[in-house]
Length: 423
Ligand code: C5P
Image (cartoon, rainbow, N blue to C red):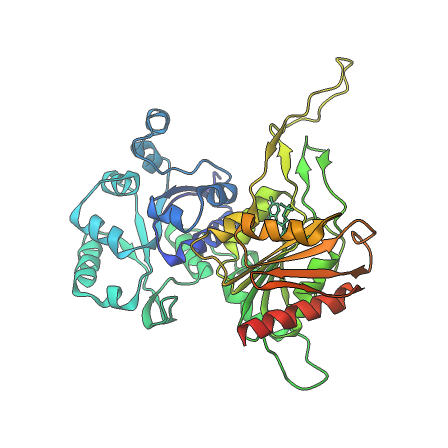
Protein backbone atom coordinates (compact mmCIF):
# COMPACT_ATOMS: atom_id res chain seq x y z
CA UNK A 1 0.00 0.00 0.00
CA UNK A 2 1.38 3.43 -0.90
CA UNK A 3 2.27 5.54 2.13
CA UNK A 4 -0.18 8.26 3.12
CA UNK A 5 1.02 11.77 2.37
CA UNK A 6 0.76 14.81 4.59
CA UNK A 7 1.39 18.34 3.41
CA UNK A 8 2.58 20.12 6.55
CA UNK A 9 2.21 23.89 6.65
CA UNK A 10 4.37 25.46 9.34
CA UNK A 11 3.57 29.01 10.42
CA UNK A 12 5.65 31.31 12.58
CA UNK A 13 5.28 30.81 16.29
CA UNK A 14 7.57 29.91 19.14
CA UNK A 15 6.21 26.33 18.87
CA UNK A 16 7.40 25.98 15.24
CA UNK A 17 10.40 23.97 16.42
CA UNK A 18 8.01 21.19 17.49
CA UNK A 19 7.07 20.72 13.82
CA UNK A 20 10.47 19.05 13.34
CA UNK A 21 9.60 16.47 15.98
CA UNK A 22 6.19 15.99 14.39
CA UNK A 23 7.81 15.21 11.03
CA UNK A 24 10.02 12.61 12.65
CA UNK A 25 7.07 10.95 14.39
CA UNK A 26 4.97 10.89 11.22
CA UNK A 27 7.79 9.37 9.20
CA UNK A 28 8.18 6.66 11.84
CA UNK A 29 4.53 5.83 11.29
CA UNK A 30 5.32 5.39 7.59
CA UNK A 31 3.70 8.67 6.56
CA UNK A 32 5.39 10.77 3.86
CA UNK A 33 5.67 14.46 4.75
CA UNK A 34 6.25 17.45 2.50
CA UNK A 35 6.62 20.85 4.17
CA UNK A 36 5.57 24.37 3.33
CA UNK A 37 6.90 27.13 5.57
CA UNK A 38 5.62 30.67 5.81
CA UNK A 39 8.14 33.48 5.84
CA UNK A 40 7.72 33.99 9.58
CA UNK A 41 8.10 30.24 10.28
CA UNK A 42 11.62 30.47 8.85
CA UNK A 43 12.48 32.92 11.64
CA UNK A 44 12.05 30.06 14.13
CA UNK A 45 13.16 26.98 12.18
CA UNK A 46 15.44 27.00 9.18
CA UNK A 47 14.18 25.44 5.93
CA UNK A 48 17.47 23.51 5.96
CA UNK A 49 16.51 21.70 9.19
CA UNK A 50 13.02 21.04 7.93
CA UNK A 51 14.43 19.73 4.65
CA UNK A 52 16.75 17.33 6.49
CA UNK A 53 13.74 16.01 8.43
CA UNK A 54 11.41 15.65 5.44
CA UNK A 55 14.26 14.57 3.12
CA UNK A 56 12.64 16.78 0.53
CA UNK A 57 12.65 20.30 -0.77
CA UNK A 58 10.86 22.76 1.51
CA UNK A 59 8.37 25.03 -0.23
CA UNK A 60 7.95 28.63 0.71
CA UNK A 61 7.79 31.38 -1.80
CA UNK A 62 4.75 31.44 -4.04
CA UNK A 63 6.57 33.59 -6.51
CA UNK A 64 9.46 31.22 -6.98
CA UNK A 65 8.83 30.60 -10.65
CA UNK A 66 10.87 27.43 -10.81
CA UNK A 67 8.78 25.81 -8.10
CA UNK A 68 5.59 27.21 -9.57
CA UNK A 69 6.35 25.74 -12.98
CA UNK A 70 7.51 22.40 -11.65
CA UNK A 71 5.07 21.94 -8.81
CA UNK A 72 2.54 24.68 -8.26
CA UNK A 73 0.32 25.16 -5.25
CA UNK A 74 -2.41 23.08 -6.84
CA UNK A 75 -0.07 20.14 -7.27
CA UNK A 76 1.20 20.41 -3.70
CA UNK A 77 -2.35 20.02 -2.48
CA UNK A 78 -3.25 17.38 -5.09
CA UNK A 79 -0.38 15.16 -4.00
CA UNK A 80 -1.46 15.15 -0.34
CA UNK A 81 -4.01 13.01 1.49
CA UNK A 82 -4.24 15.51 4.34
CA UNK A 83 -3.11 19.08 4.94
CA UNK A 84 -1.92 19.88 8.45
CA UNK A 85 -1.12 23.37 9.72
CA UNK A 86 1.16 22.99 12.74
CA UNK A 87 1.63 25.26 14.51
CA UNK A 88 -1.24 27.41 13.26
CA UNK A 89 -0.92 31.03 14.38
CA UNK A 90 -3.86 33.33 15.08
CA UNK A 91 -2.82 35.14 11.91
CA UNK A 92 -3.20 32.17 9.56
CA UNK A 93 -6.50 31.18 11.17
CA UNK A 94 -7.78 34.71 10.53
CA UNK A 95 -6.61 34.65 6.92
CA UNK A 96 -8.21 31.24 6.35
CA UNK A 97 -11.49 32.37 7.88
CA UNK A 98 -11.49 35.43 5.61
CA UNK A 99 -10.39 33.54 2.50
CA UNK A 100 -7.20 35.55 2.09
CA UNK A 101 -4.54 34.01 -0.18
CA UNK A 102 -1.41 36.16 -0.10
CA UNK A 103 1.38 33.59 0.12
CA UNK A 104 1.98 29.96 -0.80
CA UNK A 105 0.51 28.54 2.43
CA UNK A 106 -2.75 30.51 2.29
CA UNK A 107 -3.10 29.96 -1.46
CA UNK A 108 -2.83 26.19 -0.98
CA UNK A 109 -5.41 26.36 1.79
CA UNK A 110 -7.87 28.34 -0.32
CA UNK A 111 -7.39 26.11 -3.36
CA UNK A 112 -7.46 22.70 -1.71
CA UNK A 113 -10.27 20.16 -1.68
CA UNK A 114 -8.39 17.89 0.76
CA UNK A 115 -9.19 17.53 4.48
CA UNK A 116 -7.40 20.13 6.60
CA UNK A 117 -6.31 19.88 10.24
CA UNK A 118 -5.25 23.05 12.06
CA UNK A 119 -3.21 22.74 15.26
CA UNK A 120 -3.26 26.20 16.83
CA UNK A 121 -0.61 27.53 19.21
CA UNK A 122 -0.58 31.09 20.50
CA UNK A 123 -0.54 33.29 23.56
CA UNK A 124 -3.55 32.66 25.82
CA UNK A 125 -4.94 36.18 25.30
CA UNK A 126 -4.78 35.77 21.53
CA UNK A 127 -6.54 32.41 21.83
CA UNK A 128 -9.27 33.87 24.04
CA UNK A 129 -9.74 36.98 21.91
CA UNK A 130 -13.24 37.19 20.40
CA UNK A 131 -11.74 37.60 16.91
CA UNK A 132 -9.83 34.31 17.17
CA UNK A 133 -12.81 32.50 18.66
CA UNK A 134 -15.01 33.90 15.87
CA UNK A 135 -12.50 32.70 13.25
CA UNK A 136 -12.32 29.23 14.82
CA UNK A 137 -16.12 28.95 14.74
CA UNK A 138 -16.11 29.97 11.09
CA UNK A 139 -13.37 27.48 10.22
CA UNK A 140 -15.25 24.64 11.96
CA UNK A 141 -18.33 25.55 9.95
CA UNK A 142 -16.16 25.47 6.81
CA UNK A 143 -15.22 21.88 7.61
CA UNK A 144 -11.70 22.47 8.96
CA UNK A 145 -10.70 20.13 11.81
CA UNK A 146 -9.17 22.00 14.72
CA UNK A 147 -7.18 20.45 17.52
CA UNK A 148 -7.68 22.11 20.88
CA UNK A 149 -4.48 23.57 22.31
CA UNK A 150 -3.07 22.33 25.61
CA UNK A 151 -3.33 24.34 28.77
CA UNK A 152 -0.26 25.23 30.83
CA UNK A 153 2.70 27.52 31.27
CA UNK A 154 3.62 29.26 28.02
CA UNK A 155 6.89 30.51 26.59
CA UNK A 156 5.63 34.08 27.10
CA UNK A 157 5.34 33.46 30.86
CA UNK A 158 1.53 33.33 30.96
CA UNK A 159 -0.69 30.38 31.80
CA UNK A 160 -3.78 29.02 30.06
CA UNK A 161 -4.94 27.44 26.82
CA UNK A 162 -2.79 28.11 23.77
CA UNK A 163 0.13 25.70 24.01
CA UNK A 164 0.74 23.45 21.04
CA UNK A 165 -0.36 19.88 21.88
CA UNK A 166 2.60 17.52 22.24
CA UNK A 167 3.79 16.13 18.87
CA UNK A 168 2.82 12.48 19.66
CA UNK A 169 -0.75 13.65 20.29
CA UNK A 170 -0.77 15.58 17.01
CA UNK A 171 0.70 12.56 15.19
CA UNK A 172 -1.99 10.30 16.69
CA UNK A 173 -4.73 12.68 15.52
CA UNK A 174 -3.22 12.73 12.02
CA UNK A 175 -3.15 8.92 11.91
CA UNK A 176 -6.83 8.84 12.90
CA UNK A 177 -7.70 11.28 10.15
CA UNK A 178 -5.72 9.19 7.65
CA UNK A 179 -7.52 6.04 8.82
CA UNK A 180 -4.40 4.23 9.94
CA UNK A 181 -3.51 2.94 13.43
CA UNK A 182 -1.05 4.97 15.52
CA UNK A 183 1.75 2.75 16.80
CA UNK A 184 2.91 4.28 20.10
CA UNK A 185 5.96 1.97 20.17
CA UNK A 186 7.35 4.00 17.28
CA UNK A 187 7.42 7.23 19.30
CA UNK A 188 9.76 5.92 21.99
CA UNK A 189 12.57 7.83 23.56
CA UNK A 190 12.63 10.97 21.54
CA UNK A 191 9.45 12.92 21.96
CA UNK A 192 8.96 15.71 24.50
CA UNK A 193 6.28 13.73 26.35
CA UNK A 194 8.88 11.13 27.30
CA UNK A 195 11.22 13.67 28.88
CA UNK A 196 9.99 13.08 32.45
CA UNK A 197 11.38 9.54 32.16
CA UNK A 198 14.80 11.11 31.89
CA UNK A 199 14.28 12.72 35.28
CA UNK A 200 13.29 9.37 36.78
CA UNK A 201 16.43 7.77 35.42
CA UNK A 202 18.74 10.36 36.92
CA UNK A 203 21.15 8.92 39.44
CA UNK A 204 20.40 9.66 43.07
CA UNK A 205 22.98 11.65 44.92
CA UNK A 206 24.91 9.81 47.60
CA UNK A 207 25.36 13.05 49.51
CA UNK A 208 22.49 15.44 50.00
CA UNK A 209 19.86 16.34 47.43
CA UNK A 210 21.52 19.36 45.94
CA UNK A 211 20.59 19.67 42.28
CA UNK A 212 21.59 23.17 41.29
CA UNK A 213 20.56 22.71 37.67
CA UNK A 214 17.14 21.19 38.37
CA UNK A 215 14.59 22.49 35.87
CA UNK A 216 17.24 23.74 33.44
CA UNK A 217 17.47 22.36 29.93
CA UNK A 218 21.01 21.69 28.80
CA UNK A 219 21.98 20.83 25.26
CA UNK A 220 25.37 19.25 24.57
CA UNK A 221 26.99 18.19 21.31
CA UNK A 222 29.84 15.70 21.35
CA UNK A 223 32.07 13.57 19.20
CA UNK A 224 33.18 13.91 15.60
CA UNK A 225 31.00 14.07 12.52
CA UNK A 226 31.32 11.71 9.57
CA UNK A 227 30.96 13.27 6.16
CA UNK A 228 30.16 10.77 3.43
CA UNK A 229 32.27 10.60 0.28
CA UNK A 230 30.21 7.71 -1.13
CA UNK A 231 28.05 5.00 0.53
CA UNK A 232 31.09 3.32 2.13
CA UNK A 233 33.73 6.04 2.61
CA UNK A 234 33.76 9.11 4.81
CA UNK A 235 35.84 11.97 6.17
CA UNK A 236 36.22 11.98 9.98
CA UNK A 237 38.41 13.28 12.81
CA UNK A 238 39.91 11.84 16.00
CA UNK A 239 37.42 13.21 18.54
CA UNK A 240 36.40 10.45 20.99
CA UNK A 241 33.37 12.28 22.40
CA UNK A 242 34.54 11.59 25.97
CA UNK A 243 34.70 15.21 27.10
CA UNK A 244 31.21 16.01 25.77
CA UNK A 245 29.75 12.85 27.32
CA UNK A 246 31.38 13.72 30.66
CA UNK A 247 29.82 17.19 30.49
CA UNK A 248 26.38 15.73 29.67
CA UNK A 249 26.72 13.34 32.60
CA UNK A 250 27.77 16.09 35.02
CA UNK A 251 24.80 18.22 33.91
CA UNK A 252 22.35 15.33 34.46
CA UNK A 253 23.85 14.59 37.88
CA UNK A 254 23.25 18.20 38.83
CA UNK A 255 19.57 17.84 37.95
CA UNK A 256 19.40 19.28 34.46
CA UNK A 257 17.28 17.85 31.67
CA UNK A 258 20.00 16.99 29.17
CA UNK A 259 19.85 16.36 25.45
CA UNK A 260 23.10 15.04 24.02
CA UNK A 261 23.46 15.19 20.25
CA UNK A 262 26.28 12.76 19.56
CA UNK A 263 28.33 12.09 16.47
CA UNK A 264 29.52 8.52 15.83
CA UNK A 265 31.27 7.40 19.06
CA UNK A 266 31.65 4.19 21.05
CA UNK A 267 30.43 5.44 24.41
CA UNK A 268 27.65 4.46 26.80
CA UNK A 269 24.85 7.02 27.26
CA UNK A 270 25.15 8.60 30.73
CA UNK A 271 22.11 7.84 32.97
CA UNK A 272 19.27 10.31 32.63
CA UNK A 273 20.54 11.81 29.38
CA UNK A 274 18.43 11.89 26.22
CA UNK A 275 20.85 10.92 23.47
CA UNK A 276 20.31 11.58 19.80
CA UNK A 277 22.80 9.98 17.45
CA UNK A 278 23.79 11.71 14.24
CA UNK A 279 26.45 11.20 11.61
CA UNK A 280 26.98 14.36 9.62
CA UNK A 281 27.22 18.06 10.47
CA UNK A 282 23.97 18.70 8.59
CA UNK A 283 22.16 16.13 10.73
CA UNK A 284 23.76 17.55 13.86
CA UNK A 285 22.52 21.02 13.04
CA UNK A 286 18.97 19.77 12.46
CA UNK A 287 18.93 17.85 15.76
CA UNK A 288 20.43 20.78 17.68
CA UNK A 289 17.63 23.02 16.43
CA UNK A 290 15.13 20.30 17.20
CA UNK A 291 16.37 20.18 20.82
CA UNK A 292 15.62 23.87 21.41
CA UNK A 293 14.63 25.66 23.53
CA UNK A 294 17.47 25.18 26.00
CA UNK A 295 18.82 27.31 28.83
CA UNK A 296 22.41 26.33 28.13
CA UNK A 297 24.05 24.89 25.04
CA UNK A 298 27.57 23.51 25.25
CA UNK A 299 28.86 22.62 21.82
CA UNK A 300 31.78 20.29 22.35
CA UNK A 301 31.52 18.35 19.09
CA UNK A 302 34.41 18.47 16.66
CA UNK A 303 32.21 19.27 13.69
CA UNK A 304 33.81 18.72 10.29
CA UNK A 305 34.36 22.04 8.55
CA UNK A 306 33.74 20.59 5.11
CA UNK A 307 31.76 17.83 3.44
CA UNK A 308 31.90 16.34 -0.05
CA UNK A 309 30.05 18.58 -2.49
CA UNK A 310 28.46 15.62 -4.27
CA UNK A 311 27.88 12.19 -2.75
CA UNK A 312 27.22 9.56 -5.41
CA UNK A 313 24.64 6.87 -4.67
CA UNK A 314 27.05 4.12 -5.70
CA UNK A 315 30.57 3.37 -4.46
CA UNK A 316 33.24 5.21 -6.46
CA UNK A 317 35.07 2.53 -8.46
CA UNK A 318 38.82 2.22 -8.90
CA UNK A 319 38.45 1.97 -12.66
CA UNK A 320 41.92 2.85 -13.89
CA UNK A 321 40.94 6.38 -14.90
CA UNK A 322 43.21 7.94 -12.30
CA UNK A 323 42.44 9.45 -8.91
CA UNK A 324 38.87 10.82 -8.61
CA UNK A 325 38.68 14.50 -7.62
CA UNK A 326 37.17 15.25 -4.20
CA UNK A 327 35.42 18.60 -4.16
CA UNK A 328 34.47 19.93 -0.74
CA UNK A 329 31.82 22.38 0.35
CA UNK A 330 31.49 24.20 3.67
CA UNK A 331 29.39 22.80 6.50
CA UNK A 332 27.07 25.07 8.49
CA UNK A 333 28.65 26.54 11.63
CA UNK A 334 26.22 25.22 14.23
CA UNK A 335 27.58 27.38 17.05
CA UNK A 336 27.48 30.61 15.04
CA UNK A 337 23.96 29.87 13.75
CA UNK A 338 22.74 29.12 17.29
CA UNK A 339 24.08 32.51 18.37
CA UNK A 340 21.74 34.14 15.84
CA UNK A 341 18.78 31.83 16.45
CA UNK A 342 15.41 33.16 17.70
CA UNK A 343 15.60 30.56 20.47
CA UNK A 344 19.23 31.30 21.33
CA UNK A 345 20.06 29.65 24.66
CA UNK A 346 20.70 32.13 27.46
CA UNK A 347 24.20 30.74 27.91
CA UNK A 348 25.92 29.60 24.73
CA UNK A 349 29.29 27.92 25.10
CA UNK A 350 31.68 26.88 22.37
CA UNK A 351 34.85 24.85 22.53
CA UNK A 352 38.10 25.65 20.84
CA UNK A 353 40.73 23.02 20.29
CA UNK A 354 44.00 24.85 19.81
CA UNK A 355 47.60 23.83 19.45
CA UNK A 356 49.18 27.29 20.00
CA UNK A 357 48.33 30.83 21.24
CA UNK A 358 45.37 29.19 22.97
CA UNK A 359 43.84 32.14 24.83
CA UNK A 360 44.48 34.57 21.98
CA UNK A 361 42.71 32.35 19.46
CA UNK A 362 39.88 31.59 21.88
CA UNK A 363 39.26 35.28 22.54
CA UNK A 364 39.01 35.93 18.81
CA UNK A 365 36.62 32.97 18.43
CA UNK A 366 34.32 34.32 21.16
CA UNK A 367 33.64 37.40 19.07
CA UNK A 368 33.53 35.59 15.75
CA UNK A 369 30.99 32.97 16.85
CA UNK A 370 28.81 35.28 18.94
CA UNK A 371 28.76 32.93 21.93
CA UNK A 372 29.08 33.78 25.65
CA UNK A 373 32.01 31.61 26.65
CA UNK A 374 34.72 29.75 24.80
CA UNK A 375 36.31 26.83 26.58
CA UNK A 376 39.73 26.48 25.05
CA UNK A 377 41.85 23.40 25.38
CA UNK A 378 45.33 22.57 24.24
CA UNK A 379 45.18 19.63 21.86
CA UNK A 380 48.87 19.65 21.02
CA UNK A 381 49.30 16.59 23.33
CA UNK A 382 47.07 13.51 23.54
CA UNK A 383 43.85 15.25 24.65
CA UNK A 384 41.83 13.76 21.81
CA UNK A 385 40.96 10.30 23.11
CA UNK A 386 43.04 10.83 26.29
CA UNK A 387 41.93 10.85 29.95
CA UNK A 388 42.78 14.41 30.95
CA UNK A 389 42.06 17.93 29.81
CA UNK A 390 42.98 21.48 30.86
CA UNK A 391 40.49 24.29 30.27
CA UNK A 392 40.88 28.00 29.72
CA UNK A 393 37.41 29.47 30.14
CA UNK A 394 37.27 32.69 28.14
CA UNK A 395 34.33 35.00 28.90
CA UNK A 396 33.68 38.68 28.24
CA UNK A 397 35.09 39.34 31.72
CA UNK A 398 38.42 37.57 31.25
CA UNK A 399 40.11 34.20 31.32
CA UNK A 400 40.05 31.47 33.96
CA UNK A 401 42.72 28.81 33.52
CA UNK A 402 41.98 25.47 35.19
CA UNK A 403 44.67 22.86 35.74
CA UNK A 404 44.97 19.57 33.90
CA UNK A 405 42.38 17.16 35.36
CA UNK A 406 40.51 13.98 34.42
CA UNK A 407 37.74 14.70 31.91
CA UNK A 408 34.92 13.89 34.35
CA UNK A 409 36.41 16.12 37.08
CA UNK A 410 36.83 19.09 34.77
CA UNK A 411 33.33 18.48 33.37
CA UNK A 412 31.85 18.77 36.87
CA UNK A 413 33.83 21.94 37.49
CA UNK A 414 32.48 23.43 34.27
CA UNK A 415 28.89 22.54 35.18
CA UNK A 416 29.36 24.03 38.67
CA UNK A 417 30.64 27.22 37.06
CA UNK A 418 27.53 27.24 34.83
CA UNK A 419 25.23 26.66 37.82
CA UNK A 420 26.91 29.65 39.57
CA UNK A 421 26.12 31.75 36.54
CA UNK A 422 22.41 30.91 36.90
CA UNK A 423 22.34 31.22 40.71
O1 C5P B 1 35.67 27.10 14.28
P1 C5P B 1 36.01 25.98 15.21
O2 C5P B 1 35.72 24.63 14.62
O3 C5P B 1 37.35 26.06 15.81
O4 C5P B 1 35.00 26.21 16.43
C1 C5P B 1 34.86 25.27 17.46
C2 C5P B 1 33.52 25.44 18.12
O5 C5P B 1 32.50 25.65 17.16
C3 C5P B 1 33.10 24.20 18.87
O6 C5P B 1 32.26 24.58 19.95
C4 C5P B 1 32.33 23.41 17.83
O7 C5P B 1 31.42 22.50 18.42
C5 C5P B 1 31.63 24.53 17.09
N1 C5P B 1 31.41 24.27 15.66
C6 C5P B 1 30.13 24.15 15.18
N2 C5P B 1 29.89 23.95 13.84
C7 C5P B 1 30.92 23.88 12.98
C8 C5P B 1 32.24 24.00 13.44
C9 C5P B 1 32.45 24.19 14.77
O8 C5P B 1 29.21 24.23 15.99
N3 C5P B 1 30.67 23.68 11.70
